[in-house]
Image (cartoon, rainbow, N blue to C red; front, side, top):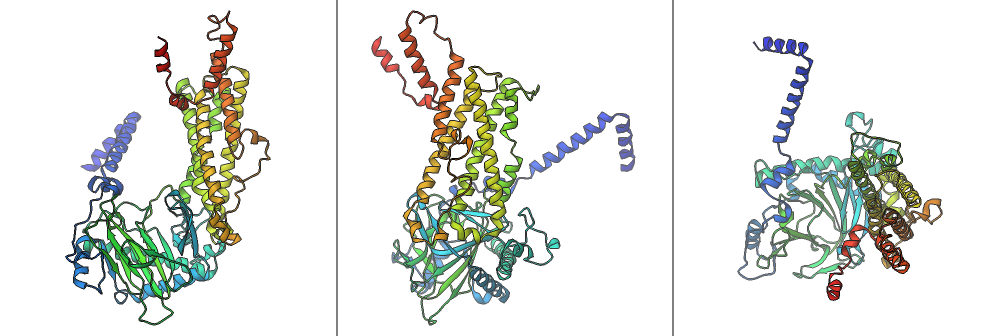
Length: 597
């Protein structure tokens, strides 16, 4: 019966081709509706759980003795009760409960990363204030092209799988030998093996975290544990030469890492941390510990009535911060007396803006504003767009281009070159991407120069050949240049910070060829490196452009009053150098007018 119906349908479609198209379109529409009926993980989270900032505070557990913090050694029962009540989501596996293969793999990873020299100190800017150097060395390993930004610094990852020529993950079937593509990039065989091993053990931690989620949170958890990167830390002990800061809130001792929540992660995603301590002294020395404190929801401070906890986990432990734990708790690492602690913190970083693939595709898919400006000189005539729509699209395109220029400069190039030659040498995966970013930046910047030249010609002629050119185009450039120039001043101060004087020459910021050039190019009068001159030129051009449209206004009324005409012209010229946003900020003259009435 079904076959007969299908045959009739085909016959009908052959007689009426339009009917076939309607059927296809209807099928596409139904498929689209079915897809839209299936909410994404992000939509599901927002609907059921809200966002991280809305996370409620954890339940209160009060200590009868009023202690500031608890450890298992002080009172095991109180510690367990408080952990179960106010710190739900924190669990750990003891070293003996883990397969030996996990310990062996992490030993291989830590040794390979150490031998490769990948652990570096970071110069960060907490709260956009004074620059400071971290008390731990660290490196980032993860999906090819991933990055992780914290305290104003973007970390560039080392890939934990083989990669192709475009920087994407290479399928196992196409990799002749594991790690061979990483060796071709410039990693040593030992380092490449360590990176591949980290990717392998990451899958084990993902599986174990999902088991914990199903066991302790929900049979069908919505929060992710699909880890896409790990931040690997090497922490010195108290006995090391580096001066560690003391934990001031609870007097727990000196810290390797202060109180914090992990940032830049997907909402309600879990975290898994493996730690290994290499002691150089006796077994009786104090081990590293993880400190925990409950917070008043997603944006509040510490809950005063809940004591903090300090868990001295033995070397080889694997601990988890599941589901919403990272949203309503903070953690810190309390330094041990002796040895070195390695830790690998596996996370689910937000995808999108922080990956090489994102910025690469955005640059490739960006339609050049120069193409749009062909309308302005009559090369392209699109009858489907009205002059108003064409003008709006042109303004939007220019604004997007300038935003992309700023994104490439401040989120990528500046972040790369501020970390020094040593950092660049240790990250061979990123050498080609940085070259592409520089090339794209120069191409976009040259397009901006051509646009300014076009606006300059329009201002000189005193009239425009088309309705596409408007004063809003000047405003977009002036506003974008002003914002970019202010950010460049901030980065210039950052480059000159005294903290870099104490670092080795190859660890200091170095010049980017397209950003830190000396003004030599012919176009630098229109787009100078410091942008101050460019902004002044644009204001003058805007004034000439606007004045040409207003020429002759008020001439009849002021024919016999040359001084008034001259005064009005000077006033208009000054006002026409301001963008429309700036004009709105100018104080109203209504009070002055009222006094004359």
